[in-house]
Length: 294
Image (cartoon, rainbow, N blue to C red; front, side, top):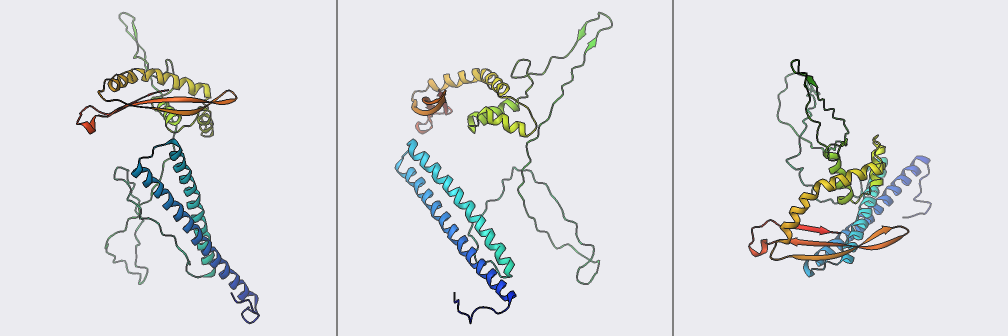
């Protein structure tokens, strides 16, 4: 940039315009640099995944490395989006077109199984150009917006009416609804959600209790632990059936994985033993299954 006195503006408005234009160019350059960094991280991650697929490396260290690379890519993508927005806002202030736009992959269409809510914008009653009311529909454009419905809590009141026989004075009443915990209060979806968060999403019960409290539901850690124990006992027969099916296989694949476990004041090493039955590569018709011991 030429900083001689001949190129500098004489009035304050022109100086402000020059500063805004220079700021827009700087932000565009930063956005381009962030996009290149995110692209490099994305390509490195893809290369590591391809190497893992080609050479069959399944070590725990390699898996943790891929997870770290994915976290790094997430941070870079976020920073690149922030820089792009800043560059666009700066360009709007100068009245010029954005100097940089990120190249994004083509978005896949939303799944067909998602329900569609049709919102029709009211058509104009008259022509905005001449004011005529003789309008005919030529077609329509549909813009799809993905939305999420926040989790809702509800209390189901099961009413069991009591009746007395006027002839023999016998009192009858339907049985109480089934709960996983004897004399419990939780419907079937609640224990399922607690188990999935704990074992599928690795969310400890104390964090679940804190999140429920922010949603206005008071469920202590001990209450959640009771639900986990009751659900585990209820699922024990299913585990027994899967265990018998897996161990009856002619070919059984086993693996021993060590995991760190937080104990009192220290971390100890735990073990997870996995046994897999899969006869499909050998022409077997038995359904595949996996069995875990910890």
